[in-house]
Image (cartoon, rainbow, N blue to C red; front, side, top):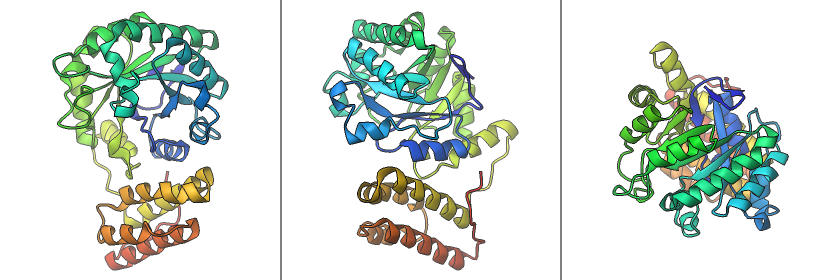
Length: 337
């Protein structure tokens, strides 16, 4: 699997998710087997570039190449300017967001709202690709099957993207109006893959190794992209890769290993965000990690009232220690790569 000049080690990728795929999470997923990760969506409006939120999203210190940054907006010139700005900040691949279904994004004609305006889609792609070409930085596109089920235009958008120089296309098997409801469909992805020559990455409802293999086989896509199924489950990447390589399932991580991974994640999360924001934004990650474990609800209720990193970290550590003792499992002391 190649994106422009970049050879990627495997075809199992992390999807960009606002508030989730920050630098600590991307780095963790890569260490646990993700072949590629795209940053959270970065605003194309220059007025926002110096904000704390955007500054964090542009922080790629220590990240494994290729660093990929997703940009969002509806103004072609502004998007081109944002692409160059991010290249100067270290981006090696620029991804254009035409897939986000969030109301606040679509209400300003960005994200998947752009699928209702194919001429504007073409203008944005053309300007961004032209801006990135002197830097030898490939441009990718992430999109959906259409605005709604009566207006699916993914195939036209895919041909347009290929003709205008997009290096790879990620397609989520839902329309914008589907949001994240119902089931993703893969027929449109398969059709797009059959008709264009650039790499196609399948996205949507890929939750386990069996589903990953099914989607790859059915669509003939070059890679898959994992979104919500990776929340609190960064092991999914190595599990899928192992299954694709061997046909065998890896055992699920024990409580000791889960503890080691989560504590390492928390350490990097606090360092990245600082005390106040780090503690509060870590709560959702902790809940995702443990939501299927015994007595998780009562622990989360208590943990959500903790307001400092030392106590939050210690509470997680002690809770897992008690769980390990009760279940008779072996502790783990470090992250196993």
